[in-house]
Image (cartoon, rainbow, N blue to C red):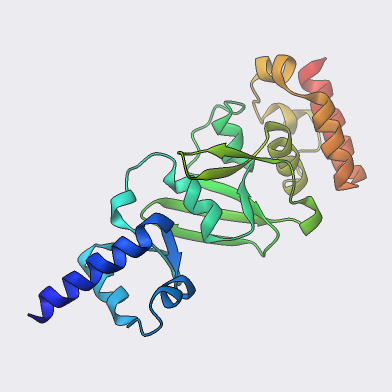
Amino acid sequence: MQQNRNKMNFIEFKSKMLELVCFNLNQIYAFQPDFDRNNLVRWKKKGYIIALRNGCFTFADFLGKPDYAYFFANRMYQPSYVSLHTALAFYGIIPEAVVQITSVSSLKTAFFANPFGEFSYKNVKRELMFGYDLKPMDSRRNLLFATPEKAILDLLYLYPFYNNEQEIRELRFDEDFMQDELNVERLNEFAEKFQSKALRKRVDLLLKVYQQ
């Protein structure tokens, strides 16, 4: 009888929380102030829910569904947006398959691993949290993704060893993209907002290598 009651509790809980996709303890208590946290332990053991990070959960239903890992990357650690190697691979600018989902955040550097993948976050100043688009995931949800130009700048800014022609070439950026599709005006406009002479030099070198 107790087992059936627990199962019904989960069905009711899921009906209330599924629309959120991922949820934290504050959202749970807003829905049910007397919620027993032991339910989460039990449901996790049963495989009903998955811990994305401490205090942040989702339902096992979303495993294997496209784009949800990106969605969780945005939601697990806020504010953040997908950038760096993941965004560059997404746009086909770099050839490598990316294992981790890499993001940029104004919070401290962080790393999380869960059944949806590995998620790393690099810190930038709050005023550098710009240059991302809302990409529709479905009719109700969007993904925060750096534009190609901002992903390139984030990479050059956060990985300063790309400071000579050999290192720049080893990025192996897609030459067709760099010559035909890169928005150089936007790249330069965004680069000015960093107010970094060192970054400016790396951007100029990048343009020289790929657009000569």
